[in-house]
Amino acid sequence: MHTNKSKNFLCSMYSAVSHNQVPLELQEMCKVISTSIGSLDDLESSLDGFRVCLTSPLVTQIMDSCKHEAPTRRLLRFFLWSNKRLVSEMKNEDFNHAIRVLAEKKDHTAMQILISDLRKDGRVMEAQTFGLIAETLVKLGREDEALGIYKNLDKFKCPRDSKTVTAIVSALCAEGHAKKAYGVFWHHKDLLSEVKPCIYRSLLYGWSMLENVKEARKIIKEMKGDGIMPDLFCFNTFLKCLCERNLKRNPSGLVPEALNVMMEMRSYRIEPNSISYNILLSCLGRARRVQESCRMLELMKKSNCAPDWVSYYLVVKVLYLTGRFGKGIKIVDEMIVAGLVPDHKFYYDLIGVLCGVERVNFALELFERMKRSTIGGYGPVYDVLIPKLCTEGNFEKGKELWDEAMAMDVTLCCSIDVLDPSITKIFKPTRKVEEEVRLQNCITANIPKTQAQVSKTRRNVNKKMESKKRQKKSASR
Image (cartoon, rainbow, N blue to C red; front, top):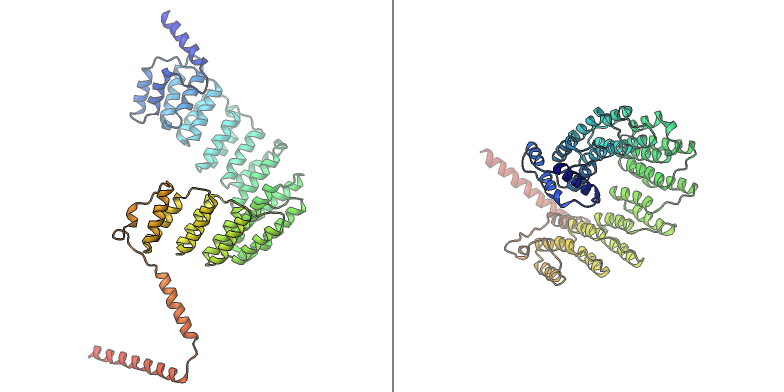
């Protein structure tokens, strides 16, 4: 009687505890589950030593507390152990929650064990649980298995309705399986009257991942046929599909075809935004189409779409990569004058590009602009510039930047040994030497020669040929 009373007291105490708190009596249990020491049988033996009255909500609470630290198989063993020792039967929602926890940790085997148990026990699978299962399986490359569960949802007592259809279509399209997703959509069109816009967006994204412009265009036509007007997201997705395809197959068609899509957007009273132009600018930059990139930036300024810092970044990057450093600096100044405050990535990446093309002087100028903007976060830039300067032999400037960083209490990742000339190996790029030699040859070739110089050159060539013949004769003897 005393034991039963104490059990009832513990059950009432644990059920009264809020979801966000773990009782002190259960902290040791959480530690045992979270540790990776010992086998799963050892874990179960340790759990048997606890005198805890478990309830279904309490099991869910413990799994939430341990899911980030505990190995997946230990979480599974704890759940299976607790399912046998509950005072009352495990609730369907708590069983579904356990499956979702294992799905988030992407353990296929553990997830399949609980799914099988759920089906054997005749429990109900929630639509949210199926959505996460489908997403996890598709990410793991098991899209056919996800479709198999979808086709047998009646065995899991889960309705095949708009929620589950949307879940499987979204999961498939997110990984580029647009054809299979379209098959599901086609067979269940009647169930999707309310969620068709969402389904169409997913399908458009799936075809865009495959860079299939023809099928993406069909989706837009189907949307119009169903009385659903494509929105800005749909057009931007299609524009990305078109630009990525043209980047690989028809770079010269990037601008005209993209502008045609933007004209179509305006016909539906949808103004292209900075994301629309940045999609095009990104592809133009990768294709090294410098003039077209600059023209697109100017077109943005003249239209109702003001360029953001990403637009300037994409244009300046292609200018730096193609050796147009003066033009790039000018555009950076235009951006600053326009009042745009770029993210750290703007300066980090462009300074890295300048160091990569051996233009550290321009990188230092850009760093000065970054410091004037007072956005902070200078540590990674110092870590790039100081070693670069020292490996080029400019230890004085490297020491100056080091002292500057120390004065600003900036934490550096690079070692102070980089400032020591006896440790740091000086690297002289051969490309610069080769460019100087090529430039000198070009200058020499363009100088007009007199008849006397031509005769002298011929005599030198004849002498070299005669000396080579004598060397061959002596070698044969």
